[in-house]
Length: 400
Image 1 (tube, rainbow, N blue to C red):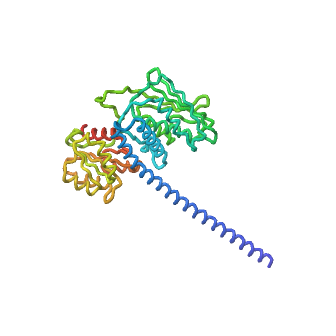
Image 2: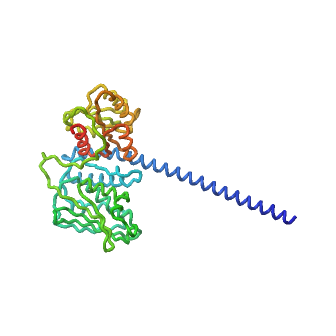
Image 3: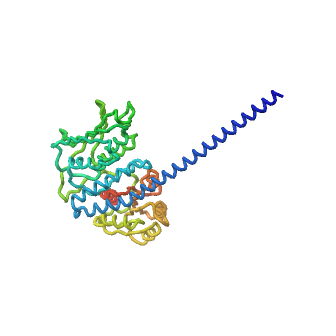
């Protein structure tokens, strides 16, 4: 009887233990599922938030570009600094990759490199950056005025300083920012911090580091958009971002400015070449303010702009009017940009025509970009819109 009682007691204890274990596993799995769901919802929110921010930012940048000549210079500089800072913040959203780089001006201007670096320090005088110290070493040999994309240069500096701050430990972070002129008359910017104050692997491959770290990859792309280059240097316990730019002199107003080449994406099948100034543009955009801002910035470069507020209206106007190129939004009511493009491409079958379509969207993910080309679009650009680059793409598709 004692053995029987002991056996039953042991069995009951083991069964009770297993039941508790199964219950604990179930609770853990339930918490894991709930956590994954919350993370998914958070990612969706961040993605939506970025989209919503990009749209008004695109309008602000477009208005700055269009009204640049009549805005007070001091006010303009404050606005540009704020816009470039906001663009740098959006670039840090993890939902996006290479398309995150925002080109928020379409007009090159003259500016002082040393002055912008000096103004930069004011931007970081907040509680968030209370442990950040900036030491500026600005050479008088740097040209007083250079010509280029001032907002992107601001964004490059902001993103670089923010990169160091995001990878710093809990100690005070001291950064040295140096400007100087090289023997080849290039402008050199160096931003350095002590390696011990940064959270990096001990043995890093600097070439791979630029590609693998998202923040550095964004910095690299902004630098390339400015016609410069960036390298990582590590010596004497210093980690340095080393930028090199060719300083452009201010040209005459009638000189055509160089624009970075966009990626060649798809073969063009336009049967008849059209000059951009003679082209009829179908602008498909559901946001009225976006539509007005885009019209302000491109109307003087083209013959006519036809506006459609959604995909169905775009199809109707496409079939009834002569259209040479289409600027297509993606997110629209009734019919999105993908479906609209598919219907246009189906209608062109057997006609021998192929109207170029450029996606202009605030949805800056690689999946959306891939989908654009799958449905038959010829090129892709993100908001905020770089109007010089957009006009370059339009001219390339129409004239070449």
